[in-house]
Length: 88
Image (cartoon, rainbow, N blue to C red; front, top):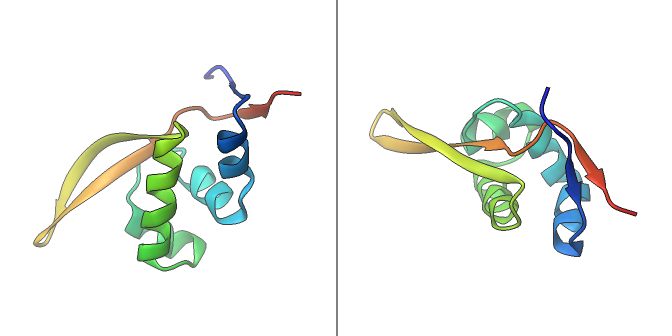
């Protein structure tokens, strides 16, 4: 069990509480790609890729690798913690 991540920066709290981004964080508890998550949560790949980049900027997702799929090189990401706690 990982230690909860305490969110004390307004940008991180805003990112974690956005409905689409919260769904992405939940789907990326295990390493996954934007395309896989898009199918899971019913969003477009482009929309999910945008939100993944924003979540990575605020430190809620981390890049964990890449994989070849056809002619594409897909990037994989994972949440930095299983549990997020908002600081009072």
